[in-house]
Length: 248
Image (cartoon, rainbow, N blue to C red; front, side, top):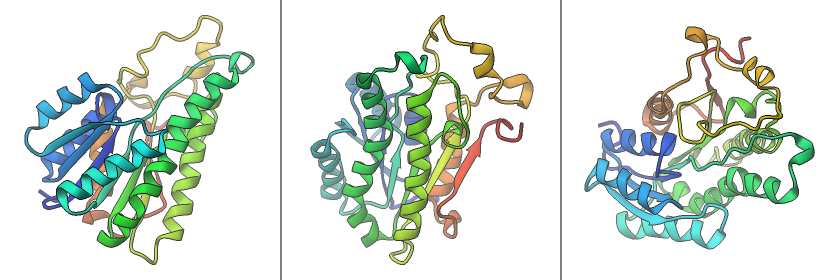
């Protein structure tokens, strides 16, 4: 129960990595405040956790929505100790076909959403000497073909993480990012477009166990560690969980 008496806010908690993170933090003793645009999935996650969870609709790309969930956490639990920015979207396709509407959507959720959540939560995290765990990606550290908006957004998350880690170090707030490779989630189960070179994409995938993808729980384990006092001297890192993708 290494997160006992801690309050954690998890975005993107309706499925995939966000759900796994919420479940793991609650199992480690945290009170969890969960947000997502998918109300039905969010309710299912809360049911899996029980009384330790409260939920609210959340659009991370909307400033008022971001502030509202932070206010809810503070109102219900008296403060905020951990912010986990997990919400994200993926959009494979040729760059020539990536119109501004698609580009803006990916950047709004994956990068602006992290900015808005951090901005809303930071005064409370300073008070609690808490921490942030941002969900970046292997695509935040290397290029992934046919994935321009997502790759740009996740590079931005890594950069934002490092900048905030330094800026708020004197206030005792830690900020870290996790960079998964392929993970078995609904997001990556999307059927890729026919007109991309999928073999080129897969050359930058996991080398471990014949390219096996991670489970969401593998990523949640790392988030739980970074969110805990066991990682009290860890800040500003981009923690890869990619089956050796970057080693290749």
